[in-house]
Image (cartoon, rainbow, N blue to C red; front, side):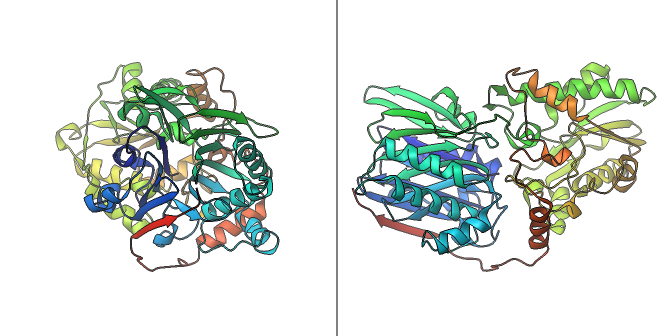
Length: 504
């Protein structure tokens, strides 16, 4: 997952983009970048680290213009340590393009070969986002007449992207001399929402991964970008959209609702907070019917994303809800930290137990999910060290048994604790006295109940059913093989400061 943002405004957008990235920081902590445009000139600054660490006042002053895009990166494809893969990415032909991408392409390798042999385009990094950028650039070149760009040309190009590209992608792009383009894959796997703001100088538009960016920047939520749809906003604020995919299936990633998105976001007509409350409701029903013998003295959430589920679960079971862990807000999300050693170390830095809430009690700890098991094992041990008599553990989602290939860092089954273990084996592995998983149908119903129009989801990490239909055992094996190799580029890299001149 990554966070993407695009703004067309009537005043300078550098601060809007910076503030928007701050509220999307949970979607990626590896790198951040902002690109703006003034006339025919692009201005870009990007580098490794958190948003607050990448940008300084001097950098912001150079990001001039009334429209632009931004990105915070969470690496899944390519090299986590290569700062050249920080986004936005740029290509100067045919019109000058900047692109920021959230998701993961499942046919990136064959596309690279096609780019080199047929389209005569060169890839400079291992990033699938660079592949996507070059596919879009090539399709624009093919669709254009006399290298002139207009809405019809751009929509034809996006249709060409949909025909060639497989996997998950939500995209914001800048087309020099024209404006902002945003589009979403035909399955709507990764989220993308639109907001607008009416000013005396004219209408302003914002496109973002989550509606929380729209709210905090003072825009008004308009709607989601539909699966397969392309949205165009020119530099004068003229808005036009078109369905560019031949066939669409609305099947958003279930893990967005479980863990990735902020609870105050609205995506695909679903309040993330309300869906997590529903998860707690269904989980309480399962505990009541399958483990009525558990003598639970307190329900304690693992901060923060499990809190709505834990609160509703406690209410349904008529058990006291207690805050048993204090979170250090200055430590990143452990799920997206590379390496088991980093995760183990960060858990103790990130959470500290309140001993009074554990001493002499049977506690039910509630988390949003169990992925690798490292965090769960450490937290359960922390509860025991704080004096808990028994520690039960509940997951608001089902066992994660399969690789995720659509932009979440679960590429290798060997790293997933549930991949080759039964629930009982997992319970023993993490050291819990009892383990309760959400059922998959209950999880689907939790989101469906909030928006009945949503009937399909990508739940591939739970059931191994890949919604795009192109993920073969050979592809999964190649991903796992690549995962086991050392990083392709271990250089630290420097921050990039590029002023790019493009045609009007």
